[in-house]
Amino acid sequence: MKSIIVDDERLARREMRSLLGEIPNVEIIGEAGSGEEAIEMISVLKPNLVLLDINMPGMNGFEVLEHLPKDCKSRVIFTTAHDEYAIQAFKVNAIDYLLKPIEPERLNEAIARAFEILEPHSNLTSSSMDIGQEQEVISNAPLKAGDPVLVREGEKCWFVNVSDIWLLESEGNYTKLYFGDKHAVILRSLAALEERLDSGVFFRANRRQIFNLQYVQSVEPWFSNSYRIMLKGNMEIDLSRRQSRVFREKLSI
Image (cartoon, rainbow, N blue to C red; front, side, top):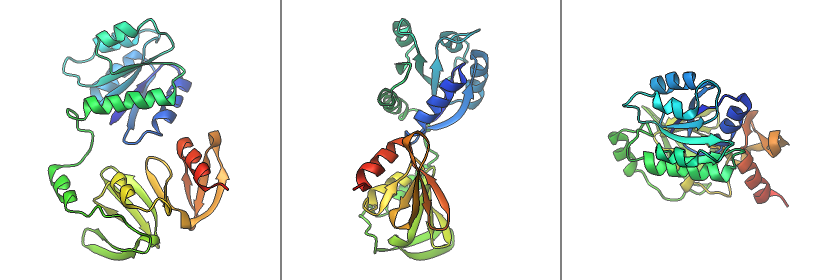
């Protein structure tokens, strides 16, 4: 879901970006610090969703909506420190109305509601009908660490043990697999692969990466109670705050 953050406060935009970064399938394609800038950005980039502050100098959030093109299909979640605008917000068909400081749980609920509303009407993925049809014939059977799998990228093929895959990275509806000193991009989403992988061997680091626990070389504390993982080969992986908590609860003794 392509999203834009609109807020006149830089720290508020940074916090929203951080919160959205922990929600899968949300792509931030722009930030605006004023109503005027927001109008231009929405008109050009045509996001699915706008996280829109109400109280901004010059032009408030409601005035931004009034100045958007009539054919604009972007939907809005309002963000504000004031609760007196709630009725007005829902009169303009806002998806949700979030009070600052924004709780991660409330934001998750709002984004889930946005997906429910937008998915039937918006191009939220880059997949085509052909891609969808090809994926249907791919096995969904669970994969054990010792299982051999065929990895194909274009005309190249490799026969690889699942345990030799040390990192998976999302690239939209595709996933980049790292194995040995090679990598390949396959026609399979990271979410689909995660369902097949052994959670005792592979760990979801953030919305873009899954890594093989057997390849962890070191773990160090990072910002905001998170962790940075060093894999063999000096590949650094940053765990999201949420997944850092899961990592700690799952692997601590």
